[in-house]
Image 1 (cartoon, rainbow, N blue to C red):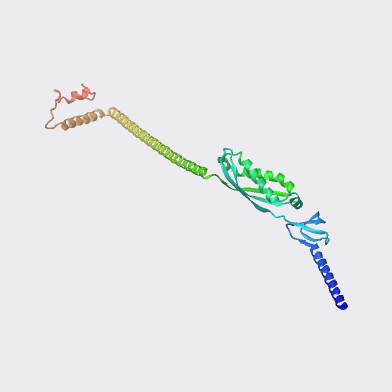
Image 2: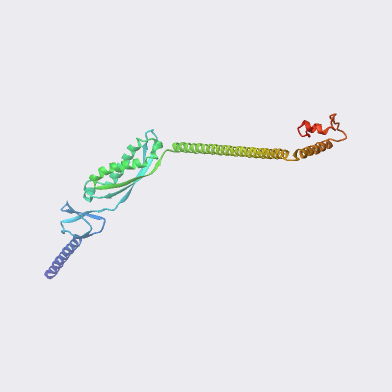
Length: 313
């Protein structure tokens, strides 16, 4: 019995020492930490915050130091649930969005606030409600950037105490009630119809203006052409009159020259006699009655009356 008791006691001591050695090994292994990139390990010593471990190799004191929290430093997106907001003209709309934040100071994000994600969402919702309350419904769809900038501004001031940075806040939807949406759709349809009517009227007006301008240009061209034709005809008639006058003047000059030449008067008298007789011959028709002067045979007297007869001796 004594030997058996001694054996059991030795086995117990060996088990205890083995367990103790195993615990030491585990603690030593846990005291060695390899921190990955974009991670931060918060270390507490005997329950008190000591430091923050950055990326790399770190050794802690076994049984004294422990990693209390692991913080992800990458940018993350947080959905902001839909909430009902009232615009300045007292219309209720459902607004939701997305927050883009990242942790800048891990110790503040862990020890400065219970849940920085929940706090950021709540602050974004309250800020959105306050901003929507200052905007009319018609402008709320156009002022998304204003709402986003106001939310980011509010979260930036609060984020300094929480150790976070708010990069962006995007509004995904602004949903008015069904009745308001139907009224807005009817209004949009009316605006489209109005623009279509105005466009058609403007097009018709432009068409009429273009047609009238074309008609005016055509009439101007026609009048210019007619004027130029009349000018050309007048120039032609003037040139014809000048040519006839020049020819007549040259003929008179030649006749005058012929009269001054020897035998000129006899030749002119002979030619006039022939023309006189030929004209009388052309007047001879069965139905024509001609009254002739009594001295028709006195041709010399007729020529003398026009200054072409022979001078009396």
